[in-house]
Length: 89
Image (cartoon, rainbow, N blue to C red; front, side, top):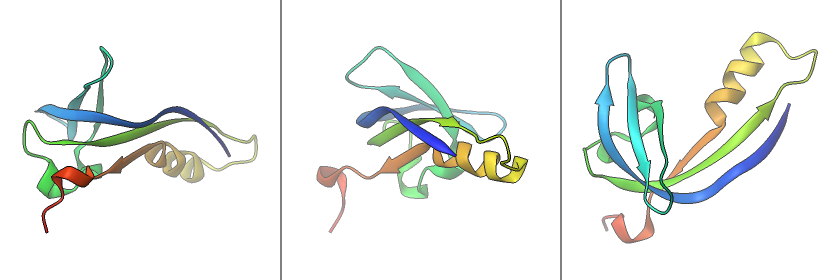
Protein backbone atom coordinates (compact mmCIF):
# COMPACT_ATOMS: atom_id res chain seq x y z
CA UNK A 1 0.00 0.00 0.00
CA UNK A 2 1.31 3.41 -0.93
CA UNK A 3 0.14 6.75 0.43
CA UNK A 4 0.66 10.15 -1.17
CA UNK A 5 0.04 13.32 0.81
CA UNK A 6 -2.61 15.57 -0.72
CA UNK A 7 -3.13 18.08 2.10
CA UNK A 8 -1.21 18.40 5.36
CA UNK A 9 -2.76 19.74 8.56
CA UNK A 10 -5.36 22.06 7.06
CA UNK A 11 -7.86 23.75 9.37
CA UNK A 12 -11.45 22.66 8.75
CA UNK A 13 -14.80 23.53 10.30
CA UNK A 14 -17.77 21.19 10.73
CA UNK A 15 -20.56 22.54 8.50
CA UNK A 16 -23.30 19.93 9.00
CA UNK A 17 -24.02 16.25 9.49
CA UNK A 18 -25.50 14.05 6.76
CA UNK A 19 -27.64 10.95 6.91
CA UNK A 20 -25.61 7.77 6.66
CA UNK A 21 -22.94 8.69 9.20
CA UNK A 22 -21.04 11.40 7.31
CA UNK A 23 -20.25 15.03 8.14
CA UNK A 24 -19.33 17.83 5.77
CA UNK A 25 -16.29 19.88 6.74
CA UNK A 26 -15.11 23.07 5.04
CA UNK A 27 -11.44 23.93 4.61
CA UNK A 28 -10.80 27.44 5.93
CA UNK A 29 -7.81 28.29 3.75
CA UNK A 30 -9.10 26.99 0.42
CA UNK A 31 -12.54 26.91 -1.24
CA UNK A 32 -13.12 23.20 -0.70
CA UNK A 33 -15.27 20.89 1.39
CA UNK A 34 -15.30 17.13 1.92
CA UNK A 35 -17.56 14.58 3.54
CA UNK A 36 -15.90 12.36 6.11
CA UNK A 37 -17.16 9.60 8.37
CA UNK A 38 -18.59 11.21 11.48
CA UNK A 39 -17.16 8.33 13.50
CA UNK A 40 -13.65 9.54 12.61
CA UNK A 41 -14.33 12.85 14.38
CA UNK A 42 -13.84 12.75 18.17
CA UNK A 43 -17.23 13.25 19.85
CA UNK A 44 -16.29 16.59 21.42
CA UNK A 45 -15.41 17.98 17.95
CA UNK A 46 -18.64 16.91 16.20
CA UNK A 47 -20.48 20.10 17.16
CA UNK A 48 -21.40 22.29 14.18
CA UNK A 49 -18.72 24.98 13.88
CA UNK A 50 -15.98 22.94 15.60
CA UNK A 51 -12.53 23.36 14.11
CA UNK A 52 -9.69 20.85 13.80
CA UNK A 53 -6.86 19.84 11.48
CA UNK A 54 -7.25 17.40 8.59
CA UNK A 55 -4.56 15.70 6.53
CA UNK A 56 -5.62 13.86 3.37
CA UNK A 57 -3.72 11.08 1.62
CA UNK A 58 -4.27 9.34 -1.70
CA UNK A 59 -4.21 5.55 -1.42
CA UNK A 60 -2.62 3.31 -4.05
CA UNK A 61 -3.24 -0.36 -3.24
CA UNK A 62 -0.82 -3.07 -4.22
CA UNK A 63 -2.13 -5.78 -6.55
CA UNK A 64 -2.12 -8.41 -3.79
CA UNK A 65 -3.82 -6.28 -1.11
CA UNK A 66 -7.05 -7.77 0.23
CA UNK A 67 -10.27 -5.77 0.26
CA UNK A 68 -9.99 -5.51 4.05
CA UNK A 69 -6.53 -3.96 3.73
CA UNK A 70 -7.80 -1.51 1.10
CA UNK A 71 -10.84 -0.52 3.19
CA UNK A 72 -8.67 0.07 6.24
CA UNK A 73 -6.23 2.13 4.17
CA UNK A 74 -9.08 4.31 2.90
CA UNK A 75 -10.16 4.98 6.49
CA UNK A 76 -6.57 5.95 7.31
CA UNK A 77 -6.41 8.31 4.31
CA UNK A 78 -8.10 10.98 6.44
CA UNK A 79 -6.19 11.97 9.58
CA UNK A 80 -7.67 14.34 12.17
CA UNK A 81 -5.87 16.32 14.82
CA UNK A 82 -7.15 18.69 17.46
CA UNK A 83 -6.08 22.33 17.15
CA UNK A 84 -3.66 23.28 19.94
CA UNK A 85 -5.54 26.54 20.60
CA UNK A 86 -8.86 24.68 20.92
CA UNK A 87 -7.66 22.02 23.39
CA UNK A 88 -9.13 22.38 26.85
CA UNK A 89 -6.84 22.03 29.83
